[in-house]
Length: 291
Image 1 (spheres, one colour):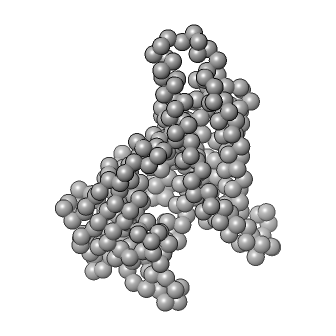
Image 2 (cartoon, helix red, strand yellow):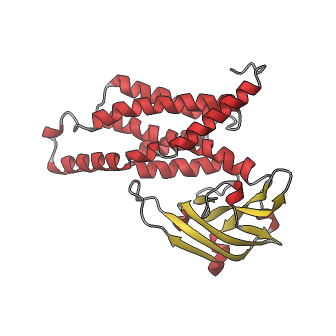
Image 3 (cartoon, one colour):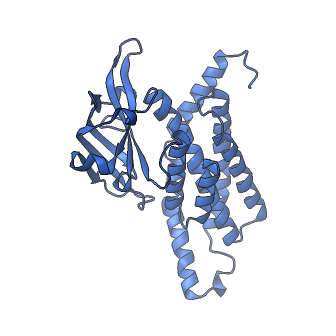
């Protein structure tokens, strides 16, 4: 099964946005790195004290030894594999560090790896983040992934993650729409958007024309979510006939949805900037038949 479809199926089965997000995040990492071991929980560790931009990376990989610190590493407290962006030198021509992506087995790192769980976020508190410290962790050559750590992994992952997380969340909303007997027109819109997200997830996330299509699809997701918001403001139509246990379950579901809904609005500025960059790239390449 393709990674986006797997994310959608897991989201459909999840009982809350947080678990749907986790499924989408793991599916995105497998789309980026198909060689990840089945069943292993992975975590991309890029962000440091001053951000995740290439020039912000201070963690180093020198002579097969990894040293440095990361923060806001999603699912790191439970991860089996940490995918760490590290500096190996300086690229003077590019004006930024030379970066590689390193796969760190948590079990193999032992006491040289320090994991501190960060405070819960206001939404999806079930999904933990952590601060990490690597104290001279030995890295085998085969665990240094090929290609540039930023352009080959971190940069495309932003779009890959967007698509897979949205696939999982849309799958979750399809389940909600069926369970809560929302209008069929809304269910059709959710399925249509989900199919578009899954199709785009199979394309090259670095292609500007694909990125423009991603922007339009995520905008459609925002519009359909607005209708979900209004429907979630009221209980299910037959709530009065439900047993007390079912009423409590409905209230919990609505409360979690309203609590976790802000997740879908984060990183909006970064998405807008990536979309603008895609349009600029297409403007330069006016001969392209793609758009």
